[in-house]
Structure formats: C-alpha cells, structure tokens
Amino acid sequence: MKNKILLSLILICAPLTASAQLLDAIRGHAQDLKSRFEDNQKVEGEILKRGQIDKNAKGQDLIHNSSGEWSLIKVGNQLFLQSSEDFKSSPGPDYHIYISSKPAIKDNDEFSAQQIEVSRIKKPNGAAFYLLKTQNPEDINSMLIWCKQFKEYIGSADLRHTK
Image 1 (cartoon, helix red, strand yellow):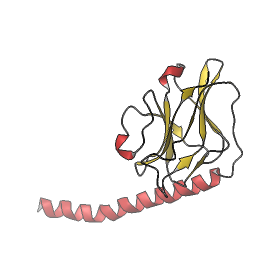
Image 2 (cartoon, one colour):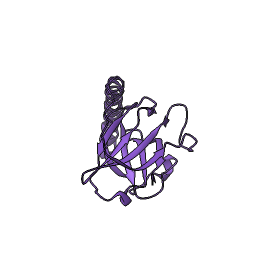
Image 3 (cartoon, helix red, strand yellow):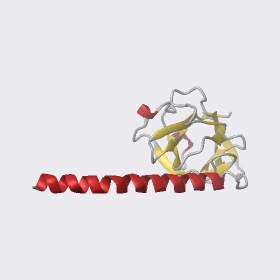
Image 4 (cartoon, helix red, strand yellow):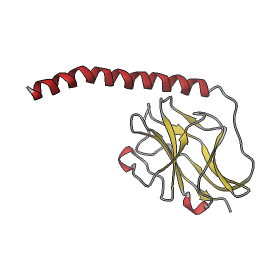
C-alpha cells in the first residue's frame, strides 16, 4: 500500500517539477535577452591579469559557447573580474561566473568544488564587472561561465599576469 501511495505521489509531482523547471528556464532566458541590450559596464583600475575564453575547449558546442576577453582589475584594495566589450555568450537561462586558483576547466566533467561562485552573469554580451570577495590576485588564475540550472559548461579562460 505504501509503495502505491509513493508511486502515485511521484507520478503527480514529476510533471509539476518539470513544469517548474521549464518556467524557471523561460524566465531565465527572458532575463538573458533583456540584459543583452543594457549598456556596457566598466570599472577603471590596474589590470593585473588577462585571458581569452578558449573557443576550442571540449565543452564548447553550437548551443553552449562564449568568446572574448576577461580581466582581473585592482581598484584600491578591491579586485574585480571584468568582461570586455567583445565578450559574447550563447543565450542561456542561468549563467553564473566562477573563479578558481586552478587552471581553467574545459568541459562539464571537470566542474568541481574548486570553482568559487562569484555572481549570476550581469551581461551575457559586452562589458560587465564583478566584485570579488578575495583581495589576493593569486587566488584567481581562471574564470568560468557555467549554466547552473542545466549544469552546462559555457566557457572559460586562464588569466595570466599582464607584466
């Protein structure tokens, strides 16, 4: 009897869960499209590191991809991650920015706890900046764009010293 009740609950809840996930994805895509038309956002400071998104990474495909330059910028005693005006990403519902002290990951299977979440992406194309919690530039050797909802690799870059 308990198994039948449990099965009935699963059959009732499964469509509701799928519907909620679909609605979240639709809302996320709408937010993504809106933010693509916002003005570029730049922070001025000392550029410590730079890197290009690896367009040849294993995780890049026709649906999940990005390109452009990212920089680590110091302003006073704060660090920011900055996308350049040439940054572009494929449309997505739930893109987040991550940093790591390790080299950039190149595919879904490499995602791990070594990736530290910074923020939901503000602008999926063009320039935007993100305040980092760390003040140590050596804590940041790579960045990653990850679709949190669908656990998909979108792009990554190794950040190297500019001097």
